[in-house]
Image (tube, rainbow, N blue to C red; front, top):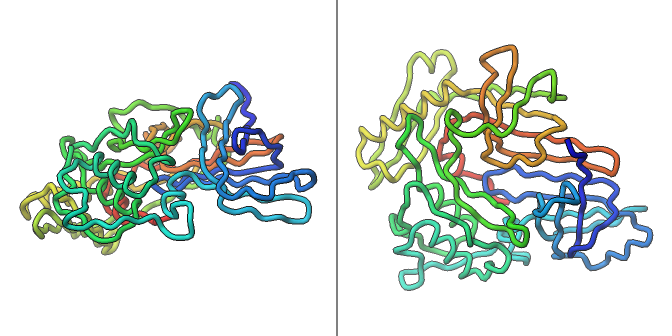
Length: 350
């Protein structure tokens, strides 16, 4: 395996960092890069909003992080630099206020697909020089931004999340939502839309075992939603509850919206699918390792353990990398949580 020695660049120029960390929690929240520079001879006085890139190896053609400096703090003998990717820039628009647009009956996103509406919203906010949508694709299934129409003065990122969360693929045994991701094309950050990966049919990108390449492991036993409420189109609704599961796991509620469902029976059937999927896949991992630095959100990995109930395929949800000139480690947040739209509808803003 080629040794990883991260490079950090400000405006394309390498900097001699002391240590740093990269973190991406996924779910259309901004990735961050924090690093320390030596104070002596640094000369970095006006760094706010400068572009920062991080490459894992000198030979890489695309950075693992591209963003903009938001804070700089000088200590006794070092400078702490904090940068966010373009999603963080989108929230604030490069200023102190959140990037917003006003949608009215005469100036709106009506009649467009979700992808086209997102492109229009980014353009209206004058953010298309920072975040590109050349390869955005579209949702599966393709949906209209007009049902229901979006009105009011809203944050651009809020609009993007709202549009993507409306589309859900219900063609398989388990419903899967669409998600938004950032990818780098070597020159720009590109927003793309993907269908959440299929744990059974998707390609496994990496294999982890508890004795070979996992240095620390935390297992999280998630609460099981025992009462699932699904809201459909035109205020139709369906509820599914499981008495035995309530007795075993207590009463826990999950409410989601799926505007493709048009009857109470469809809503109840969808709620039952979500309950069963949650019941079968209730475990999450937080892994510390020295492998998998190039893994991205929505990639599939396999975890092999002696206990079969923890072994299996998982989706990458987030990643943290800690680095210095002499050390390097990777932390992964992974799950096989079934796709419940609530996770995307209620995603925490940056």
